[in-house]
Length: 299
Image: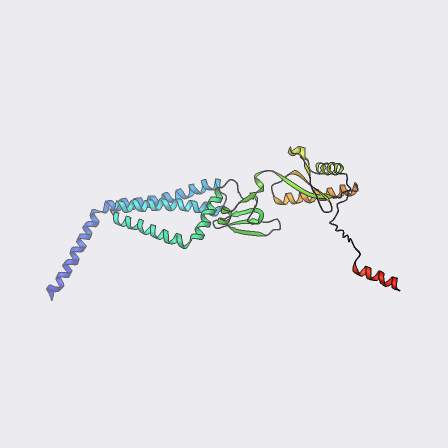
């Protein structure tokens, strides 16, 4: 019985002695690996702070700048981990980690395809110069001021103070109109006057009214005026002029003011803006009228 117990004890002792010897032999490698890990950890903090400051100069979205800074710091830590494993001669472990990371990344990417797509789109939007916070844009049937470009969604504040939240992917995949890229906007007014109006006088009065209320010389643009068609009850025209503005609200205000002033000028000059009128003409008397006439003759 004693011999049976001594054999396993000797085996365990020999294993421990071998492990201890291996540990002693690899103390320099362990020291190097530990030094690399600590250095990578400290360096990652430095990279995080530097990346955060540099990115914030270009991107004003805090969430996006922190994401980029964290990604940079994680890359530094992973690089330190791989170097440490290499110093310990754990090449197979390193290969296994890389393989596992690839498979895990594929599985996570498939599971979070929509979320990752919005996140990547948010980062791309943050770097685009033609769309910034404070811009007035129109996209996907909505128009408003850009108040936030987050990692997953895009926030618009409309003129009526409603907040619209749109996925970043939708913004990136669809066209948008940015009114803030230029300081000038063109306003279009469509109207019609009666057939008995003096068309030359209408054109002169319209352009004069717009010029008095909107300084076109300062902008360096001219007023356009064109008659477009003979309508059912009016001769229709279109006039176009320019204003200084960067939002759709500026355009609406200018258009409203122009309509009011043109209407006042037309009323003062006795120029009619007709509403649709339909005249019915009958070639023969109606049956009822004919019957009434025969009844009167009979009586």
